[in-house]
Image 1 (tube, rainbow, N blue to C red):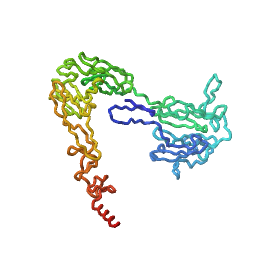
Image 2: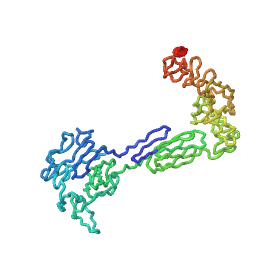
Image 3: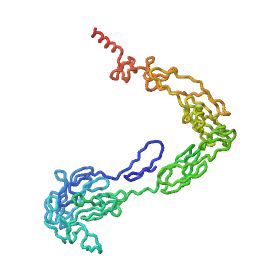
Image 4: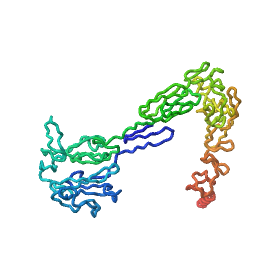
Length: 546
C-alpha cells in the first residue's frame, strides 16, 4: 500500500499480518532564533539563537549578536573595524559606537538554512549617521537624493501607461512623490510554497537556486525577510513541492472461488508477477502510475487492474456451473451420485465430491495423521495440490447444516502416495476444520475427566481410522490422576500453580504471593512464615489472657 501525509512524501507497506510504522519527515522547522527588531535599522536590536553561521569555533553554540554601527572606507564596504565577541560574549562592534559620515548599520537577522535557524546579517546605509547600533533618524526625508530614508517607500510603483503612472525610479530608491507606504504581503506571510511580493521593500532575488528570499510584514507595518532553503529547489519566487512518484507499489489479491486445488494467478507485466494459493494469493507489483494490467488464472478467465498505488482484489470462478448428477449450494458441490463428480484423472472421488486418493503422488500430512483437534492439510506433490481439514456444515446447504453440525472431514495420508478423507463425528462440535474441545473449569474441588467411547464413521472405500490420540478436552487448571484440579488446590505438599502443573510448596522465609504456596499455608509480607512461629504467637496470646 502507498501512504502519503500532509508533511509530504510517500511510504510503502506490504500487508503481511504484522504491525509496522510509516514515518514521514515533516519540513516544518521549529524556530530557534529570535530577533528583537526585525529589519528596523532605526532601532538597535539583538538576535538570540544558534551561532553556526559564525565559524567552526561556534558550531553547536547558542548566543547573542547585536546590531552595530560601521564606519565605511571611502564610502564603500568593507568597513574600518570588524565585529568581535565582547567581554559578555556578545558579537558586536564596540570600536564604532558613533559614526557621523559614511556610516552604515549591520542588522542581525534570523537566517534559515533549512537545518537550523542561525543569526546572519545585512548592512544598510545610514544617511544621517549611526549611533549605538541604529541609524540616526533624519529630521525630514529628502526626496531625490537616491537614498531611501525613514518614512519613504523602498519600492517602485508598477508601470502602467493606462493608469498614467511614470516609471521614474528604480528598486532601492525613493519614488518622486516621497509617499509613506505601509508594508503589505500578497501571500499572507511566510508562505514558502506560494509566490508573493510585498510593498515597502527591496525585492532582490537570492542567487542560490535552492534559497528563497521570503519577504513578509510585521504587525507594526515594518518589512522583514527570511532566507529559506527549499528542499526541492526554488522556482519563480516559491519553493518547489515534492514531486509525486511516477513508480507506484500496490498489492493485488487473487481470489479463487470454488477452488478444489492450488491455483495460480499471472499478470502480463514485464516482471511476470504471479502468486499461488488454494483459496487466494497476494502479489506485490510496481509500475508507472496508470499502467493497465491483464490477469489470468489456472481457473480460467481474465481480470483487469490499473496501477494507482492502492491495494485491490480480483476474482476468478473455478467452478462455473454445477456438474450433472450433483447438488450445489452457492456454487459449491454438496453431494453427487456415484461416478457423477468430475474427478481428476487418476483419482477416485466419493459421493460428496471429495477426492479419496490419487496415484503418482507423494503424500504429506501437516498434522501427522488423523489429528481431529488440530487443523491440518495434506499436500500431494504430483501434481501440486493441497487438501484441507474442514467441517461438513461449512459446505452444506442450510437445510442440511444441522445434520452435519458435528461432522469433520479429516484429511490424512492413506499411504505414502495416496490420501483420503475420514468422516469423524466431533463430540462437542466442529469449527474451522477442527473438533471443539470440552472445557473443564473446576472452582473449589477437582472434576473427574469424563471418558467416552468414540468411533469414526469412515468414508466410502477407506479403512476405518483408529481412535484419535489427541485429548478432546481442555483442563483450566492442573490435570492429575484423571482429574482436573483448580488453581491453588493443595495436594501431597504441592499446589496447582498458574503454569498448569503441581508445584512443591515453598519453605519458610522464601518469597510468596499466596497462602497456598507456603507449606505453613501462611504468606505474610510476601514471605512464607513457619508453623512454629504461628504457634508461638498463639501461645503468647493464650498466656496474655489467662
